[in-house]
Amino acid sequence: MGLSSLGAYQMAQRLGLAEIQATGLHRLDLYAASLEREIGKYAFLPGTLELQAEVLDLLAHPAGQKPPNKVNAYLEQLNDRAGTLAIYVINPQGLVLATSNWRRADSYLGENLSFRPYFRDAVAQGSGRFFGIGTTRGEPGYYLASTLVDARGTQGIAVIKVSLDQLEQSWTTVEAPVLVSDENGVVILGSVPDWKFTTLRTLDEATAKAFDQTQQYNRRALKPLGLRELRELDHGARLVSIAKERPEMVSVYPVAGRFLAQSRALPGTPWTLTVLSHLEQVDEIAQSHALIALIGAALLFVLGLMLNERRRHLKDRLAAREALQAAHDELERKVEQRTADLWASNHRLQAEVTERTRTEANLRAAQDELVQAGKLAAIGQLSTGIAHELNQPLTALRTLSGNSLRFLERGDLATTRTNLERMAQLADRMGRITGQLRSFAHKSPVASRPVPLDQAVANALAVLEGRIAESQAVIQCPASSPCPVALCDGNRLEQVLINLIGNALDAVHAPERPRIDIRCSQQADRVQVQVRDHGPGLAEAVRAHLFEPFFTTKEAGVGLGLGLALSAGIVREFQGSLSGANHPEGGAVFTLELPRAPDEPSDTMSPPHD
Image (cartoon, rainbow, N blue to C red; front, side, top):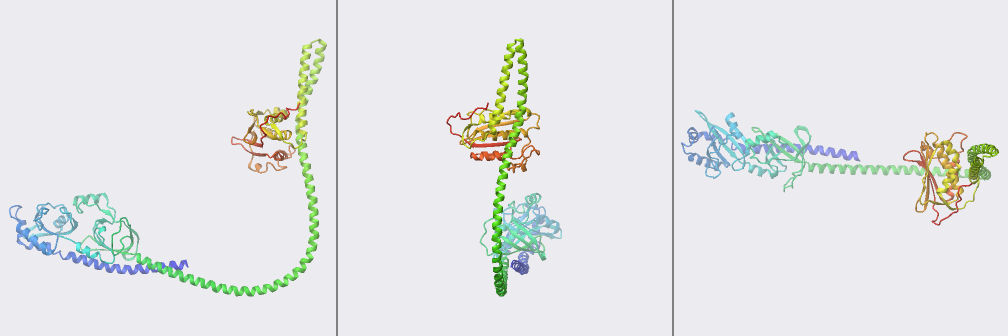
């Protein structure tokens, strides 16, 4: 349908353009003949003046010696009978000696017109033709100049100024606009009054200065017509457009839009006659043909669809009848087969349900064992560190006890007392270490109570004191004022903090000066603990599996990958959350959020275990 419409549109446009082009050529012939006829009526007048002896006698005598009134009266009478604008005689120096308008105040008499192009052409070639605007009255006209010659040679120049307004007036009733442009591209005649003294092309600076010297257009502002060429056609025709830059005057034809322009040079003049045929009617006819082609193609398409649909409908009915019979036969066979298969499937389903129940029970048992193994592994790691810590105080106790016996035998009671005090301090330290291990291993009931975060962090750091000293890590934990208080179980919170701080210690083992930042804060109804290490951070693939059981980035045998999974489960029991991300300044940061406890003071949190 689209191709049919486009083809019809283009074909109608080509035929319409060809018809308009033929009509335009005929109009060109008519307009050119009328213009040549109008100018030809006056072409003989300048030459007739040399037949008058009074005119030649006036030119032969110096100015002022012979009164020109008789010649002026003759030129005045000739101008009235010929219907011209003015007739005047110029001497070879360009001075007007006699004129038909000698009685008027703005008479040409005595003016020097040697600068006018028609005067220079007549002196050089014997005749001259020129269209311009008069410098005295500002009246546009066509000038015909011819030399006046006798036996003595050229005596002067006769000039006839003709008005073409009557021709322009007759053009306003034609069917298509027409214009005449001079050698400068300036419209000097036209069927549209607004087009007169506009330019068909942009004037350069040199041409504008030349106009000021010759005063051809009497310094009138020459504005562009706004004619733009779209493309070339055959036989010199062109597609052009004229912009609507001013309100359109009342006219029998459009004066803006797209036109077919056809031009012809006028013989004997540097002028160009151009006929503009508007394309509105061609476009409307082309659109009508395109619409008719579109509707016809649509009707054929719909008819084809109906015939094809009818054929498919008959074919489908026959196929459906055959398929219905085949389906009936197949259905009876399948009913018998399905009935037999149903009993067998029922027995298999019962067996699968039983097997799945057994498998789920085994999986739950295995998961419980793995969680317990993770707890034992964590306790084992803590026990290894604590055993290392206890070994040093025991060695010191043995050494101090032996020294104390020797100092006691010598009677040095002061040194003995000092050794005993140091032994007591070492015993207190060992008690705190074993107390933390016992507290961590103790499975407290799931009961929430107010827990100061600063005290829970201090207890966790006390458990990990040996690992912190061994790694030489710097722990930055500024005190919070007021101290945030969480609503949870204190022992389980310490288990989570020990796991997070332990992971941070593993992440910062490589730097020369490892550092861990711990910050506690509170909001409206939540408290928060952030544990940040200054290690390499978390890879994108690691972040997606942080809290999955058995996922670990540590070496084989170092961890089971259950620490974060267990910690996240503990936090969820208290309506909290645990998340991990990369800090903008580097390293990983784990954020622990818990419900905030009421503001009542509470001393229920036990101090570090001794």
